[in-house]
Image (cartoon, rainbow over all chains, first blue to last red; front, side, top):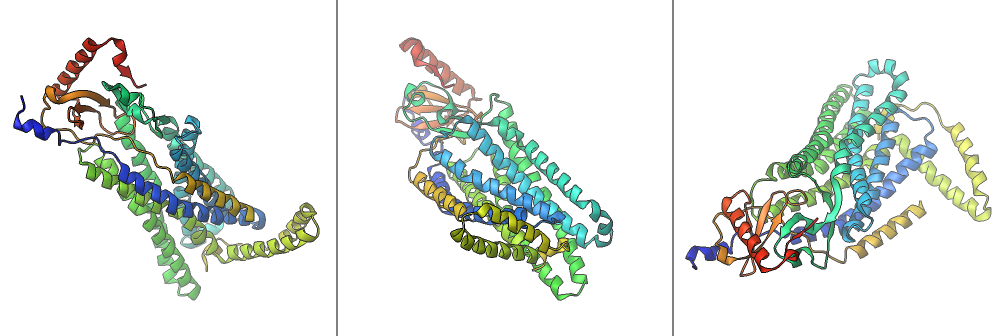
Length: 368
Length: 102
């Protein structure tokens, strides 16, 4: 009965527990994501406040930048909520799971596509400068329409996430068992992840959703940015001008940071997609998951670098920002003496409006 | 602005408190045994579905030695073992021994 070979069977492949990856994930969440969260909150709120309160005249790029900041801010806000729920069994419920994951997806797509729009806008104003004069008059309307379109596309692409993400019990992965205690074990760990009612849609959607993310959420904006920014650099280099060289550096910084943040994650994701159904050891499985976790944190970092790369690097924006600090300082001083702050804010609104010029040029957002 | 950084700080605090307690994650099969497992070594079984976190369908056999082994449900011998175990369970007791997770 006990053949020699059967002893070996007990050393066969067992279910892989992902404890090590779990630890890395938790470390990333604690140390990296919290820093990203705080920096992202501060940076993007500053951008939004500056644009909504101070910059009365908005160029096409300003509209995009404001939308990027809103998208990044929403992303940064959902991040701690997701982390909180992961820790506490998703006690906010199934709808929180769907909503938070869906928001996450919408902001991922909208953020990336808007960055592509910014590159396209800069391309039109710099490379196609002559033609752009004719378009300029209609640009504001265009940029609003494009932003609405981007958000619609982002929403559309996130629909599968809304539909298929579900809060469920971790033990639900086991459909049937002869061990009663396995199913009815006291500790029920809730997760928020893909859950499919159908056995055949599962593999399809598990491939489709991340593939779309890599294609539309990375490669499409990446290609658009590569085309636009390389043409911009060529145009700028042809015009020999000191200021222009600074602009080239800004462009290079924007592209390099984009690639550094998103390329590793998308390569890891692509590998994960291709590798998903291949039989593999627990070690391999662990490495793939860990690579995803680490590169994902790096990708998150991008949303707190955007305010610096796109907004604060611009001369105009920095001036507006300095004005805010100045006004805040004055406001604070005033507030201490007289508490009628509401009248005061409306007062300085008017004065701000009158002092602001209408000579905003698109390229200003990118001269240093 | 000060208000915002205050909320940020409280979020941070909440985060760090939340992260101090750790949970165990569910395990998934990622490959199958190559040889058959003799029925005498099997205590019980569980069936893993690909509908959730796990990417492949699998049968997890619980051995006498207390190990879990992943088997391919497409293999005829695997289904034979399950049939045998189901019968065994049925004969041992009434209806309350088999259960559906969802």
